[in-house]
Image (cartoon, rainbow, N blue to C red):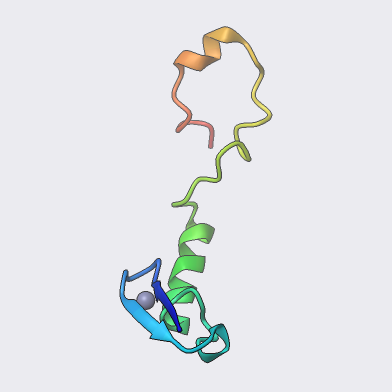
Length: 69
Ligand SMILES: [Zn+2]
């Protein structure tokens, strides 16, 4: 038995095996697509991926990371 919680809607589920839930770790395929859409919309920020090319000047540390794009 595998007990999990959907990252999208926070609904808890119990499944006998991962094979029983093709959308694992999401409760449904719809929630899986919702999560994918969030990534595409840029609502989730991957640490270090988009900001990695910034020049390493000390003064840049004080500026906001949110205005890069
Ligand atoms: Zn869900």
